[in-house]
Length: 122
Image (cartoon, rainbow, N blue to C red; front, side, top):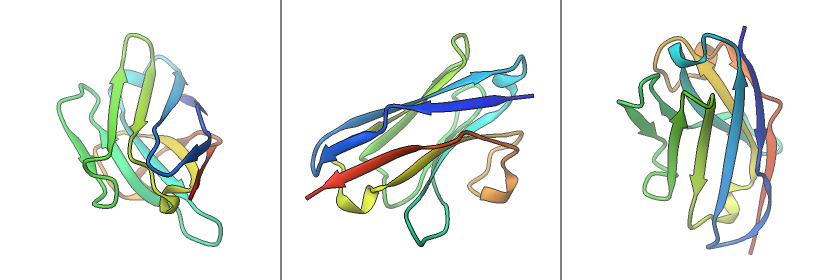
């Protein structure tokens, strides 16, 4: 019932900034928490950030806290991830996902986008 499409990925130098966007379709978007995950080659998909349905709560992985900011606009059915001070370790495919609760667990998310590649060069 929720379809997600990420955009905004690309190549960026270490220390730079990038903004990822996720466009959602579906009438129930506002009832979902929205999360960002990432997956590097050869590694498991890992949690990055999550925001509640009403933007009242956010939570970040320790690896990105203070550098990344998640936000959403329910009227526009969008969620964004502002990435500042990026590092080579941030290189991964980034996915947005929808969760009926508020979770950091990959298995709890019901819908996933196709992902967008972020590459951070040294």
